[in-house]
Image 1: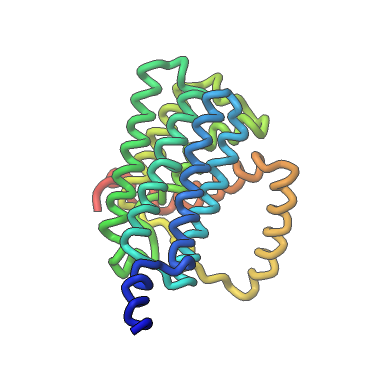
Image 2: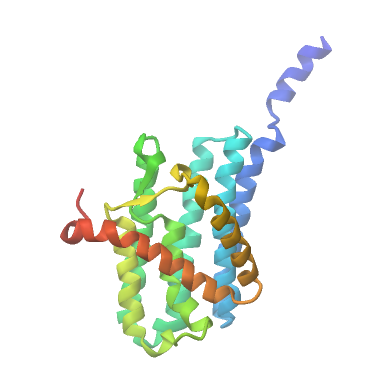
Length: 248
């Protein structure tokens, strides 16, 4: 009798490990949105660092969900909403506050283009995530990578390679271009499908050591380099698509 009395009570409980991926997602969302608060206080380096941290956490929640066998439709939708806020809304507002505010309506239009593109990109990802090709490559630039590209003008400024605030029109057009890349039909690589040649493993390990060193010494220069490498990787796909970036 005691066993039967406990059963309904046990059904109302969920294993904590099943909640861990969603807790990580919510934590990443809070960190990403807090970057807006620091941007309002003109603490831009900290604001950008928080977005980078939220991108790192975004890569962890999906991995945790798969390892803990805690994947769910709810978790996937929560992750997409978090991505929209952290990698769509937050970078757009940061760039507007940092470099586009003086352009007034002109700069705001491109912020809307970028944020709208991020929303469309994530909506399409939700629809296509069950397709087999989604494991081999992404269609368009993913939201976290798009945020990294969008923030490139800030990386350049922080690395003292130039001052994006001196060319707000260029920053506005760059933001719009990144938005187009996010909703484009070009195929971009997925980390899940990456295969490293055995002969390149040593170079990858050494490169990782160098990157870790730069995180603590020249992090913004590292981000410029990583963004530049990603852009170079996109060039063949962009060239192949040319005038049909937005068509399949």
